Length: 530
Image 1 (cartoon, rainbow, N blue to C red):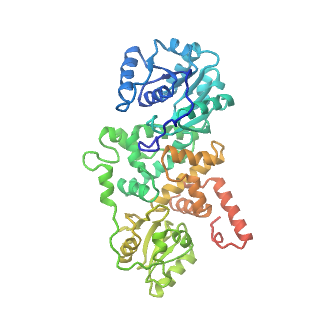
Image 2 (image 1 turned 45 degrees about the horizontal axis):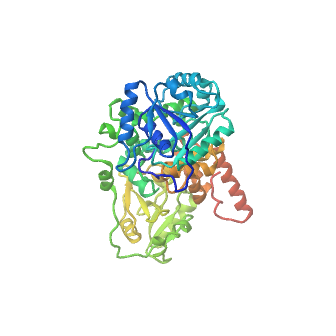
Image 3 (image 1 turned 120 degrees about the horizontal axis):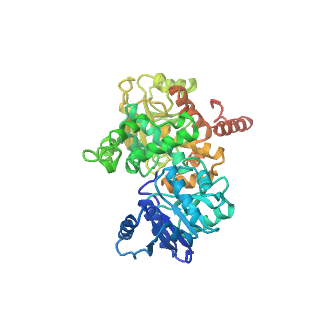
């Protein structure tokens, strides 16, 4: 999975070239063609191979025709045969279909023809590099080079170290990736590696929200507006193909054996109906009737002029909100409207504070995604979730007829005063943005905990591979372990689903912050639910 419009990478002037490196790319789908052009563009000698000579010739013509207008034709040739091409190669990259048996057979053929120094890289997005190393017979020379689509534009390459891959081979691979003008991020061999693994809950939760009554356009509009994603998760699934996502989901469930990774039934139903996404004309969106851009525009309320710009902000999340100039600019302790910010909490102190404000004649909007407000929200108070981490604030407004929760008049006044676009959401645990972000962050810290990748690598991979404005662990540092833990625990208790089980490392870090806060007399962690 990759974002079609994410960060691009080109070689900088004076960057190293790969002159003299002999590269063979096997499998000429969109990824194989793009990878071949990448290597040819920095001077490598590139040969390509597909299932037969006729297919190779046809795909090679396509490879050459796909270059940008005015760009030179890539110096890529067709290998006479697999054995002839591989025999003198330094690097073979396989980009054939994600079928283990097919890859194993191919690796055996490469091993029979290749020299003793040949390095073999797989562009797989999820299959085991260790297993491929065994199939090749020399696992120390096998690794993953997972390029993202489109290969020529995307900066990230996941360099996947198999259990027996030689460290010197990993270093050579990193140097090759850097010579392409791209950024290598090293990770251990684990299902889905970094980006596809960490983003799996993002896709799962987006689909679950749809099954629970939230429109796809609402999910995607919030992911873009509140989290800063370039493409919403459902639009991205449609772009990549729901059949591809379903296959990788089944791989993740099989490999991990954890029910948290089970595919969402709606994906299977759409695939069975042939509604596999944008290429099929229909997936989560109907591309003939209402494509994603138009669908999002239909659900987003844009702010208008505000006659009253004074607002008061209180609650445990007030300090974070007041760092945004659009909110701080109208802050007034005696304003007629108060935003009570409690992003992931709804305890007795929160409810008492809201009731006290209302009894003093103040209009109150509760800013939280905690499911406790479903039953604790006082009559007359509004419920929102205000996201102020981007340039422009963005709000989720809880309107749920089934739950008896309506938007109050003060909501529009607040949103107009701070210039915040908004989307109406149902009263579901975690609402939308926090549910997406916290599950994604939880998966990220789990990847770090198990040793698949370092924190900096995870954040870099998500920023380059998905064009997220901040990495998931940067978000964790900004919001605090206690806030994220409380959000996950609220969802876990409400849904009773292991999908929301907090990673042990997250719990330990939150406990450490709590202890240090108590020792130092800090108040911010005193209400943390450990």
